[in-house]
Every structure is written in structure tokens, then in C-alpha cells.
Image 1 (cartoon, rainbow, N blue to C red):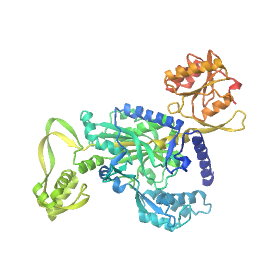
Image 2 (cartoon, rainbow, N blue to C red):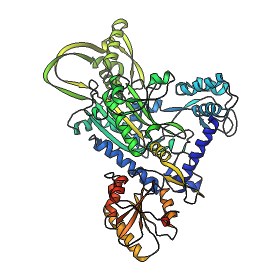
Image 3 (cartoon, one colour):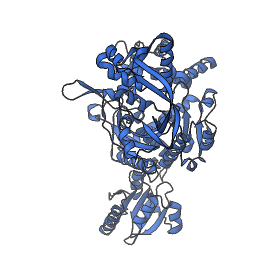
Length: 626
């Protein structure tokens, strides 16, 4: 199959999925009666139920399993917090404008679309040009504003809607800005991630945990990014749900006591060496990846394994799930290692979970900006003689030079890491003064030799004080759910073969409704039995839907198959009922009094449908399927 036909098939499949999702109210564009707003979506009843089930399983799989400390922090964040984290200065995408209409576009998206279009649809493309376009796609994230602008100009890329010329690319900050309070003097932003709320609470969380490491804190909440030109449905939106974990660990010991529980898992991994060499993702044991140093440490490897189990239990196809390591040019300067869980869907490989070793960057940044030490301590059983870095600011000299800013300069000097401090010491000794960036002042100042003493001295210590490292798994819930919709969707012919019926094969774990109850015919006795069954389902905590419409039972099955309901109870007598499984369409006979417990056993995962086929008599009736 050629690339163009494959692209058309993907688009047709995607359209079938999206049409079904919108028609059955899984999600719809927000403010639709006012023509909507790009990048904002409402979840309808089944979509809310799927999302709720995914988040409930996330809590069970991570928060409960690892004894995490869950927090819930505000969406509105003061500017100072996001200044310290780097978001105010660096959280940008490159944007271009239609020079005549002023419409904005993401520069990298226009270049990416152009290259993909040429590769997939241009039959006359030369091998040399094809190789050039593939190279551009590979290095897209690493191109500067000037390089992006040059490519757009060279390829003659214009505004998609009007074909007007485009401006040169320039940075646009993706955060929604707001003011806190009526005066407008206190600036803030809608948070672009939930992590900062955990970092600024580290000191209290560490105390709550008995001053012990390692420990993890977790948060589920809304985040906001003012995307330039959002598209791809739920994959790129302006308001979305994140579930994030910050696992705090001693930087000198990143082992994990439960690593052996995941070390034998084997799945598709895409190390950076393979990407650079032009190879494909390959199956690797996570234990082997850690032992060979492909994955930086055990704790990072443990969370990669747990993320794999989480996604595959939800219903993500393990053959279309891979863990891709960030290339050197993608890595943040402070990160020790970073992997993305990528899921393949009709849009290609989509990053849905990031699992990063962020070192101690975040806690150090907030320590410097706030002046509050966000540190942990290891108590020694016996005092130890250690070589200790001592930074002693001379407050009188600093006061004369910096007056009211003395305290901020003093805190910044005391917060220096060993490498930076020793470099300053060498510069002061050779030149008598050194330039020093003070984060809280947002400027570089000149430090003279008389203003600070830096030395290493041996002393006995009863504890080691250090800034913990952070392993961060961050989950884009909307992206995971959209990929789950695609992985779960299929069509099958109706009994007459005259139409294609849509089905979502959701595992019971995430299905929006666990079962339906159908009286076979409109009959008071059958409806009374249906109500009794409904009451027992409610008592056992099973979500259900009763359908007493006069349509044929086959059409009612088709309607609920399209919602992904795994089991259907058909009331066709007063003593026993037919229980049907969605994907196999197999049926068994179960007593009315037992059926709720059977449904609970299967939907809670205590028994399989195969177990029930063995335990109960099978049932077949040509009247029950259309």
C-alpha cells in the first residue's frame, strides 16, 4: 500500500471514530451553539465516566500502590513561582502570522505538515528531496527561530487558509496570564502543569512523611496552555487534565526496593542511540535496560515499568506502545534522563506520558527564589569527618554595595552548588571580582573578593544535608483517553450484513457503563424483574442502563456495543436471564438472583468471561441478535 493510500485510510478511520464519539456524546466542542472555541472540549456522560474510571485506576495503580501523598493545589499561580521554575521566560513556542489577516500559526507545525504532505502525496518526489524532508522532520524540535524561518522561506510555505505570506517566527509564551485581586498589581498565571504546587510544598510534605526519603507526592488537576493553533482534537487542547507524580529520592541512591517486580517486563523501547542510527524500536527487558545503563537508574526504570502496566491494563495495544528516550537536543540541561511513553494512533506516535529524572533542579530553583531551604537530611549513626564547602558572605561589604538587596544576594551566594562556588573562588582569586546571576533580582551583579569567603574545610558532621533528586512521571489524561478510543474501536457487520456496526472494546475497568438491562418485550412482569436486577446492581456498585424501548433487542445490543458496554442482561423469563458478552456475542443463562454478582465478578476482574462460560449453561437464540 502506498503512503498516500495509507494516509487516506488513517483519515477515514479517524473520522469514523470521531463521528461516533461526538454522536454518542463522549465529547463535543465546547460552546458549540456559539460556533465553539478551538482547543476546548466538553466531556459528555460516557466520556466523563471513562475519564473517571481512568483516574480511579491511576489512583489505585500509583497512589495506593506506592503510598503516595496526594495534594490538590490551586490552578491560579503567582508569577514569582513560575518565574523561579523558568516558565515565564522559557515556556514558549515559535509563532508566525499571516501578514495580511494577522491569523497566527505554529511555525513548526506548518513546516511539519509541508514535509509530511510532500512525503505522503507527491508522486514525483526525488529520493534526495525525500531524504531532506525526513531529516527536517527528525531535527524539527532543534531548529532555532532563524532556521525555521529560513526553511519556511526556502519551501515557499504560505498561510494555509489564505496563501498570504508569513512573518518571521517569533516566540509566544503559552501561559494564560491573569491578575490576582482587584488592584491588578499581583500578577499570576493559570498553571501550565501541576508539578510546581508539589515542589513548593516539599518542606511540609517531607515533615508529614516523618522526614524520610524516598517518598512520592501526586496530584491530579487541570492545566492550561494557550496553544497557538490547536488541532488534533483531544490531543492538543488549551485546558486539560494532568496526573503527575514527583518521587523524591536521595541523589546518591536511586535504587528502588520494588524494581524486581517489573525487571522482567519486556516491551518496545527506543533508546537514543537507535534513533540516531536510524533503527526502529525494539523489545528490551527493563531490567536489562537499567543494568546496561540505557535507563539511568532503577527508580526511573521502575516507573517506566509501572507506566507500561498501567497503559496496557487500560486497553492500550502493547504493539502500538513504545518508550522513546529523549535525544541530547531534547533534554533539559538539568535532566539526567528522560523517556516518553508514546502511543501510535491515526495521527502517528503521540507522547502521552513523560518519565523524567529532573535531578535537583526544581527544588534548588525554588530554594534560591524563596530563600526557604527545600532540603532533606540523612542522619549518621556515628559522626563523620567530611570535606565541607563553606560559603561565608561578608554582610557588611554586601550591605555597602547592594543596600536593600543585600539579603537576596546573600541567599543566592549561600545557595550556590559546589561547582559554581569553586569556579567563583578561582575567578575571585585570579581577577579579584566575578559576575554572578541573582535569580531573585533577575540580573547579573559583580561580586568582589572582599564580599565572600569560599573554602573547603574538614569537619565532623552528624548528618548530611542535601537537595533531593526528583523522578517525575507526568500523564496527559486526555491524550491517553483519545488513544484508548482509537485502540478500542472496530466495526462488524450486522446479522443481515446490510450495515457496519461500531463497537468500542473497552476493558470492563474503563467501560463507561458496566452492563445494560433489557426486558425482551414490553411486559409488566419482565419490567418488574428488570427493576429488581437494577436494584441489586446498584447495591453492588455496578453502573448500568435500562432500555425498555420497543425496538428490537438486536438494535438495543448495537446501541450499547457502540458505547462499549461489556455485558448485557436480557430479561426473557421471570426466573433466569440471558447474559451476553459484547465482543464474542456469546450468551449464558443465569438465575435472576445471581446475575448481579456474576456481573460484578467479571467487571471487577475476579473472573473472566471464559470462567463464566464454563460455569453456566450457554444460551443461543436467533431472536436476540439482528
